Image (cartoon, helix red, strand yellow):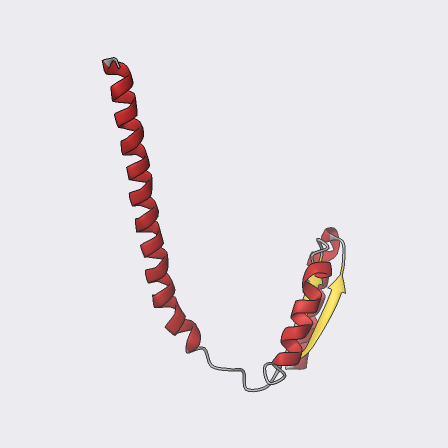
Length: 108
């Protein structure tokens, strides 16, 4: 084995050790962040009355997620009163959002 190839194998080993160390540090940081954030999420108060959720689908994702959203509504009637689903092409989204804001603002 010549000096060049032994240096290369040494460098490759150090690189994988460095990757392992970095992945361990990132993993530990992720766990620490989760432990810090979890209590904050748990302390969010429930709404005074069930909410109405408006979902505007512009990308077709609703075909995959609508059943899950409806299941959440059924399991949590004290949190979610109603879910309104609307499908629209992306160019129409700003107008629909503006209309929803206007109707939400006038009802309060």
